[in-house]
Length: 105
Image (cartoon, rainbow, N blue to C red):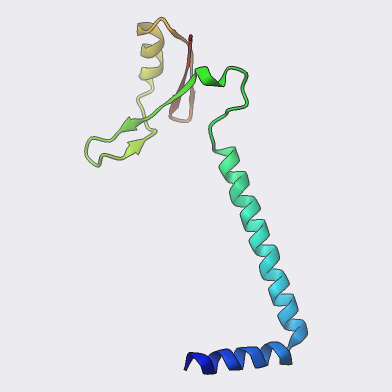
C-alpha cells in the first residue's frame, strides 16, 4: 500500500514539475525562516553574556514546593532584602518578575 502511494507521488512530481519546484522551494524557505526565527528567539531570551562583568551577574529562580518545578516568579520584596542583608550584593534589578543580582567577587 505504501509503495503504491510512493509511486503515485513520484508520478505526480514528474507530471507537475513547476508546482513541485515551487512547493519544495517554499518549504525550504519556510524552514530556513523558522530556524532563523528560533535562533533569534533563543538569543533574545538567553542570558546576557555580553556585559563586561557578566560573571558577576546571577539570576535567581525559585522552586515551587507543590510541583517541584523551577519558577521565575519571586516576591518583589526579595530584591530589596537581598541587597539589604548581603553586603556583597552591589545592585539588584527586576525584569518582569525575574531578579538578577550583581555581586562583588
